Image 1: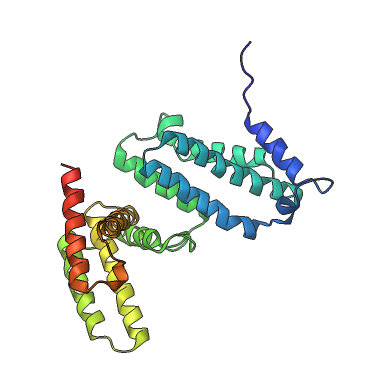
Image 2: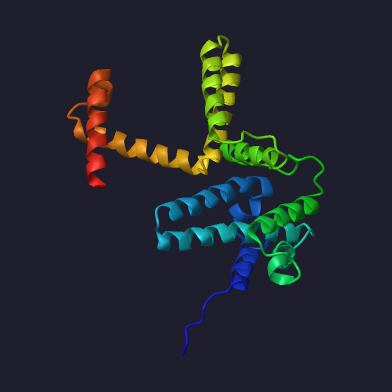
Length: 258
């Protein structure tokens, strides 16, 4: 006899039980959209982390955790009389059909550039955007939001023609950061510098969020190797000794990837 597998409806039923005022889970009942939102963001990052590490078993688990967040929000909305999980599913199905006229409407152009342009036009119309920069969520990570803002501006031609302009802007902003004196001015100029680096990354077809995540992971690996290699606490060493350990860790990792 074939094994019975759980479905989305089973998860919806479990969540309804957890949120039942009569005998439900005290913690789940105490949650609100605002209190759950950080968990939703965290689960999305954990999905991305599982993908970056190439772990399919972990990706399966993390996708389940992320799906739970969707069901949790939908359940609270249903209790408030706003919408239910079925409405969420119907809305995304309608949206995907609407945003893919080249698939579901054979009269629509099928060229890549036309598809991307039409996709953005449909999204803007759905949101009721007026300005070019409308609709870029404030809650996005700073690097990602900067990238999206720059892409929006580039659509109307406000952009460097190539990466050389973005590179020159980095040098300019670095000089201005060096010249800043007050804490407020330093913060402002460093922000401009970071924004310029995002622009350079965009022109080099690099996702800055992914690049920074990778650089941080690389630093972490090398620093941990320094700790393993040293017979003394790192805090007791001179900067020269620390730099020697760093160089050794860098060489060791380079040889391990050959």
